[in-house]
Length: 367
Image 1: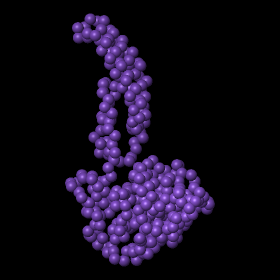
Image 2 (image 1 turned 30 degrees about the horizontal axis):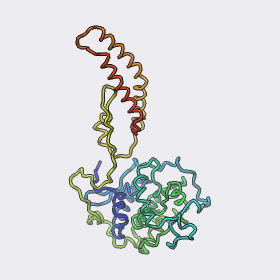
Image 3 (image 1 turned 30 degrees about the vertical axis):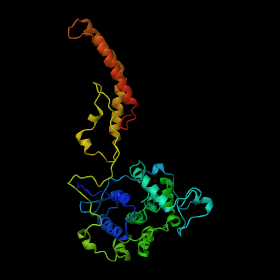
Image 4 (image 1 turned 180 degrees about the vertical axis):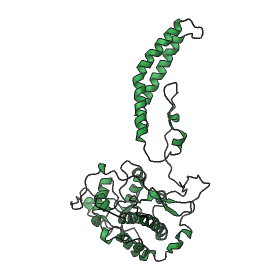
């Protein structure tokens, strides 16, 4: 598997907040070529998002996560219906369609564009690695479980373009359910804040990507998107020969500085005895190769839970057997076993304390 040390678009957007149109055009154009390539092979990606747009050492875009992407867990969301009426008391927009704040009665509960951007940045990383995932880039026909085709990927690209130029996705809300409802009712919620200085061509392209399937650019092929006026100066066949908008700093093939840093918890300093493997030993060299991935090995957790359960169940039996053995050895008069009963009591207390600490540690890898 090719390693791309330039980081991903999510990290770049979190660092830059917004991109200029020329920079965004470079990355959107390369994304168009990547999506077009998989469509030509009769595949639909279905999970186009900044996290899956990676940069190589030269800063050029490559699309990732084919078949290994994490779909939205719709079991956590209430059923959606595009014909349902929206309760504006429950869905707050940052501003109206002209970029002005609404009536003063509701002003305290609405977010300004800056507040929206700050809130998005604060929650972006959490949403990306949550169990449910973020639905901000999913097309409405996918959420409604209608039939869909390659055009759903172009909707996602439109949402990413909006985020690049505005600073947050077009339908972002405090919770995924509200975001899904906004996407389904996109006609009422697709707006540009007053402070977003987009050219008419950029707005037009976004509107033509975030729309009904029947009118969405790309439904008839990527050439529809390439022909849009916003791309008029793009030389498509030379795009990957151009100097990238951002040239990542890379020192060596395994440099990870361009990726998001993860907070690591210090392992507990528990003295080990003979009861079970240490936590460090639970991570084999193979496991260490995948540190930082969001894949959850539930079978391993189940096995660990079963193992620890057996340890708890067998502890009393083991304790009785060892005590009997020590008593027999101590009474044998063996010169190598002075104070055997005292040593056993100390060992017994230490092991019992260790089991209790493991059971109450709250470690995600332990039941």
